[in-house]
Image (cartoon, rainbow, N blue to C red; front, side, top):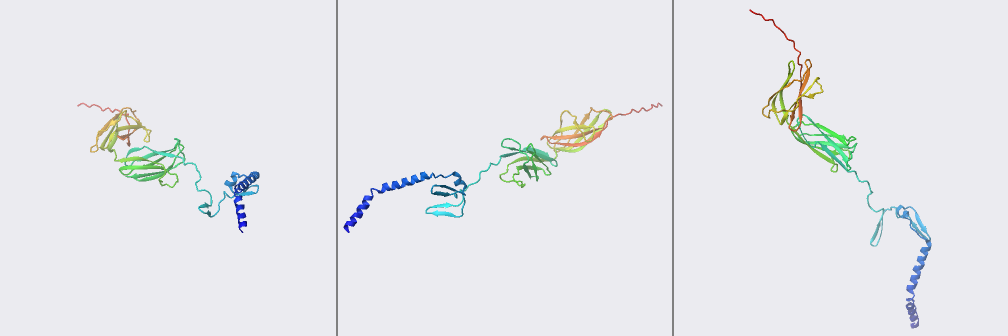
Length: 308
């Protein structure tokens, strides 16, 4: 019993010297076998899935690129099904700018006002066929829509019926819903509606043999800078301004004034039509008329002289 035990111990002890060498020989043989097999892993097998890659005694099923339901877990590791999460790459949305003109304006109540929207990309090129929305908020309210032309422009017009201030908003209606979205490009313009600049009491034209005398009277003038007179040979024009310089205003908001202008550049027997234009300090004008007059010709009448 003692002899057998000693022999077994000697066998194990002696094998310790040969164990590392055997392990190295085993690994070397495996490496030679793999090298002789010429195994390779093509890229399409991993990314595409649905195939196999074989060499020697090894076969790799091409299921790496395919999805499966569930998870594979073992120890602290878990392999989820499907592909890596992420979003598909897409082209960035074009940057669009919109500008409203005029940025500020003053009009009289009862008249119309037009803003022009210009839409360009980030290169400064016009954007055609772009849907736009418009909204007015303030003393007056209005809304509308439009589509840009080849120049990237669209207009919006509304009439102010109430005195006060309006904010006009124009936006690029990217989704076409007619409602301004938080991410849709926009611009704003300011509008003031004031009372009528001139309250006109009368405007007349009187002809004589070689002239036409124009007279007008105002009851009140608010922010009025002056007047222009326009003439035509037909009621519907075309009209031409006849005064070389603006006729200065003489009235004020409390009291008006009386005015007279003589038109000497006339031809006898021709009927002339006249319009009066008042212009305020903001450049807003209002036309009145027309009135008409026909100078000469006149016949002279001689009466006999009777002496007593």
